[in-house]
Image (cartoon, rainbow, N blue to C red):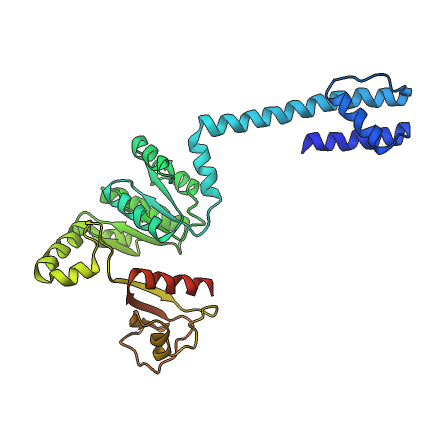
Length: 317
């Protein structure tokens, strides 16, 4: 940009001072700036003075441009942390995953499957490097500090997951996040049942106890094995046959003012389990003649592919 400006000024200057054509002025400007030298153009005294100024300005601008390029190249190669932060700055509505242990890894896997952009944070350089090698925007740092959360773009994020192995750390993440972003959605991991309420008081909207959920899942697999097989991915490579999800109906949605029965006809493989209305009332198995209204939250069940197609079409509408 700076070099281009110098070329334009040089071309205009020679055209005005020497009366040359635009091409002659451009050519002599380039000859001067590149220090090539190409014969005597018979400059006037004013032209010589302008040339001297142009040479000094040209050398300064080229030097500045070169230094900026070298600084940028060095930053990209030698400072990957800076590169990650710059990538995070370009995101909006993304999720933030704090903690790259087994729970955090699983969270990232599911977010990738859903095509959701996210930033990962962890103080362990090895885990962060591993995540970066997998194409993840990962920042090495302490997620309990405001600086790291801001580097991850928490003020533009849609949600954050505090999933470290320590309840005290997760609580600090919740407190810091809620202070920076009062309306952001926060999900937290709790190792102990006694930490659930503490994490909620710290600002978490949802608190999950992996041990409890894992134990419940195993118990249900013993009692109702076929049902569990439909609902959970057991890690055997088989695709889950059923998935629960939610869809928010708004003014831009193609579902607005649509009857439940018409929804069923258009989506035979997806079932509306219930509707959460704007007044907070939850309707299980709503009346088929009911029309969907702005602000309704649909709780649906269906195959993964069909549920995703419906959700994506709703977002695109």
